[in-house]
Amino acid sequence: MTVLGVDGCRSGWVGVLLGTTTQVLVAPTIEALVDLAGRVEAVAIDIPIDLPTTEPRNVERLARARLPGRASTVFNAPASDVLDAPDYHAGNAANRAALGLGLSKQTWYLVPKIREVRDWLAGRSGVPVVEAHPEVCFAAMNGGVVIDGKTTAAGEAARVRLLADHGIEVTATPRRGVAVDDVLDAAATAWTARRVADGVAERLPAEPREQLSPAIWV
Image (tube, rainbow, N blue to C red):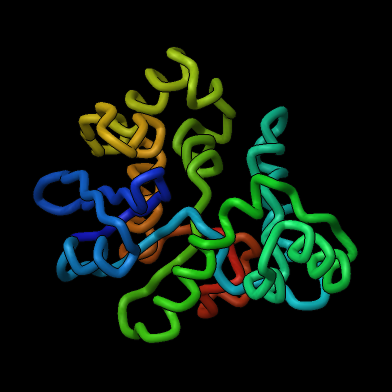
């Protein structure tokens, strides 16, 4: 069984491919990354899939409940209308009109990648592609206990240990356009992708299980 976990990075996308070996892949587009991975049984990606139109998604609230003290690491997904906005001010207005919420700058910076994944998924079928959140994944790996922030030395060490404890030995070294935490986050989503392929992944919310999105999978 081979699966792929994906996270965004400055140079585009980074993936961790889990199979007979563990490989770190980097590509400028999501399509190129998945093509580079070859045949996989599931893909898990840290990006919102299936955006809201008239009210905020429930999935973020459920994910935040898994991260006491670190709930702020879960951003609200933007309204689908935001993807057509030409700038932040227009996107913020579109989000308020659709969902009654302002749009954070952090979420706005993700819009090009959210749009890219939306367009890629529109032309793709067959392999399950699910949304995952690395912080929720790591907490689940740790028995529900939240660990230190990913940019701290303690947090990085804890993430490497947790991945190894779950059979994922990944070399997380910085490279141009890819930070260490990007690689570790991709490895965490690969853990979820493997669970999806095995049929044991948890869905937030739990139902309808046969519907891949909108949901965060753990």
